[in-house]
Length: 502
Image (cartoon, rainbow, N blue to C red; front, top):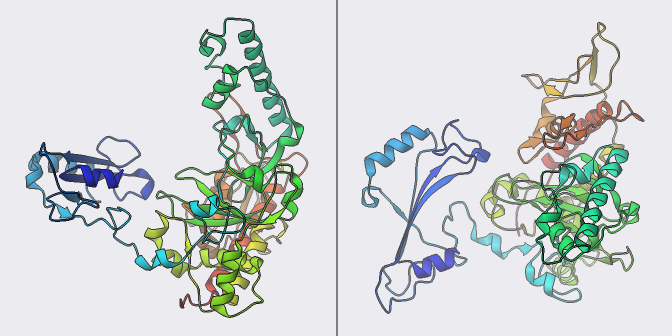
């Protein structure tokens, strides 16, 4: 779009009023419309003149076509922005900054580093299209996380209640198929469905299936464990009919057996949250605010057979050649990539690049130091439930209320030294350093607090309760284990060798 706007318009003016609530606003009422997304005023000027010179990128061959940008002060509230617009009135009264798009037609290039493009891409569309093990990238196949379009219906902490929900919406759907089959097929499908019924979600794909009279069958093997949010597992009905988009996940985690051997680098992408990554062996969710991309070590056929490595032979050759070391394996490259994605120097320097591109992986001077760190991080992140509990966590019990291990909604104390677990229990002695391990907008521990609470869906009344009758202390123990994982992650990351690119 930017390319064609630059080519087609004689002048483009972007007045950026800011106000994106997801980017840590410095002023609470900064948005001129009171909405969550940022707001801009854009003027596209196209003059009625024949035979205008070509303007690829906005400036070429003496063309008068230009792109101009102005951003209001981040400290202004909406009234100050209104006053600014009232005062300026006209495009000619603003001190515009001329923009020079780069070769990829990016307009705002501040913070971008050109050498990033010279590093090895983790994945590329070209490598996904290449047959065999070709393609100039580290991974041949990569995929978005799963998109259900009905999270409250197909995700759940409790397997029994999830099965009941799935049985219900499949029965509702098949009833609609039977009704439509008995009527004139020219009648709109909307006549056979109730979009207000909270027990089912009539999404685009499901409506299309109803139109074709395709029945749905409950498959017990499709009930799987998934990583819904960082360090938060839920059961998932992993079914192509009832998941709006599986993308390539059926080739990454086709059966439960593959979870014992496969590993996936789950990568948060997009502009809204800082890039973060987490290794998993389960089906990962796509995540909000930009989505996620998943880079597995193995890929399979849909029945779980025909396992093959997903690191390209090209990448193996390049790494071995660069480091003059034929002992490097594909697992080493996998762990090196994971380690480097945690490197604070890499993430800080290339923050702007990582918001618009998949990571490109440079050659660090100490390959084995980064690979070793990545392997250790992979071990504790995949097996976080098997890590020891933080030993100095103190349990402060309220003797005036009955013993209770169930949570409703946990919260942190103001100094973050305590977790108010419930009326019965306070967890004291949370180490400050545990909060240094962050995954996007939250620390690992804050993800646990955010996700492990009783939630009631307003529309359907579905209660999602993380408490386990068979293991009442699961959440308390999980907190202790995630503290251990957080501290160990911080220790490993701080011990990473200097980036010292070669």
